[in-house]
Image 1 (tube, rainbow, N blue to C red):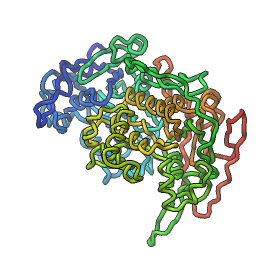
Image 2 (spheres, helix red, strand yellow):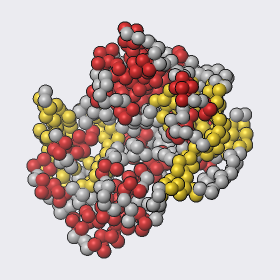
Image 3 (spheres, rainbow, N blue to C red):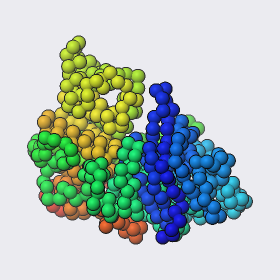
Image 4 (spheres, rainbow, N blue to C red):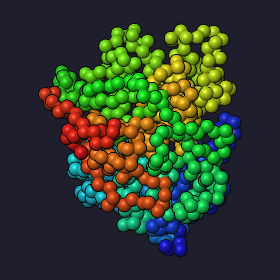
Length: 606
């Protein structure tokens, strides 16, 4: 490694001006990044990690912040060292994209929806490198091939909305790498992606870094990703750096209590090996924790048979149905009382559509959904209203599922009033009790959703789902957007409630380590079909279907000694679930290879 760091952050202090005076976002933070090195900055929401990266780009000023102190020394390509805090915005425009590239967290907001992929990729090359349109287009095509986008020629002419999340993220990486920057800043670049796509993108970034010698500043809250990518780690907490060290030191010998708590909260694949039933995680600093296995019972509460859900694709002048999306195709499973069945798979595999079909939030085409022995699909609107008292849903995005204009107390009380289960002061007592159950202070009852953090909003969504004392809860990616420590608390809370109230969960997720922790049964979905289903310990220790094996292989492990290279990952592109109107799929057929462990024998397309 060269002695001269590409960027030196020295005593950085960033302040935001608010009505109540200045708020410190980052206080006295220092670290260096050397050529060809990946420095991971980890911490939870609000720790100041994104503010640090936006300060290096001098973009923090466009978000209401200001650099109040410290130096940001950048080693330029032509050899001079520049203090970015004193550079003019004109000079920063030349450096951004050219010498410092940035991959933003949300690719849909980082791309311009009205320009083609080609126009967005060539813009930086023409501005910074002075290439002609033809040269820039040739280089753009090369970049798309480098990030392994299928059919790059066709993608060049497409707009961002025509690409999947994983492809959009690849385009953003290609844009950041276009001018071969000396420093690449990646802000949570894989947070919203599926495990297989995340594994590919991490391996891709690692390969590009080695090939080009770029220095990488990688911001994340996912400790498994840190183990996969980092050379050195900087741990941040409430705007301060609390610990720094090599990736081995941080994982094997953490010094600061916060780092220890962060590592303890990470669910690791393989933690549940040899345990027959789910049990809550042991969290640091939590006293009187009940950790007992959750057995549940053998009574079937939900029986789904041959469920089919398809969505029409409209086209032509008269908006006729020209094709159908086969979202859920011939799916059958059982959920037992007091137990959790998890449906796992990647975006677009049909797991959320299956959950919504069961509650008839989308109408299935055919099949049978028996809840406590009665077929829900034959219910009238009033019967369905009554049945929903026993079947509730926790949605993926709590902010979108909460009303921004209502106090939290009224949102949790609304189901009680709808079903006339409580009145007057009784409502207030019931809601206060629910706030206690989800471990939120009663003073929060008067707050609005925007005054809460993501984890607190998710607890409100759980409290609202519990208000009617349901027997079954469909949890759709209920913890996917949460920080690890908050995620661990919410998972423990769900398991405690399950043990106390004999709740059944249909848990929909793409996070294999979380699924291993909470499930009794696991079903793996691919392209609308269940390709494998069985007891959790059997599916995890002995995956039988090729797709399940690929999914397990892709999960990053929070251990720097178990890194994966691109060679380890061999994913096939997922085929399209859209078929012509006349298409008749084969029925799903299964083979029972172990007691209760079934694998699909019909061609699943994988």
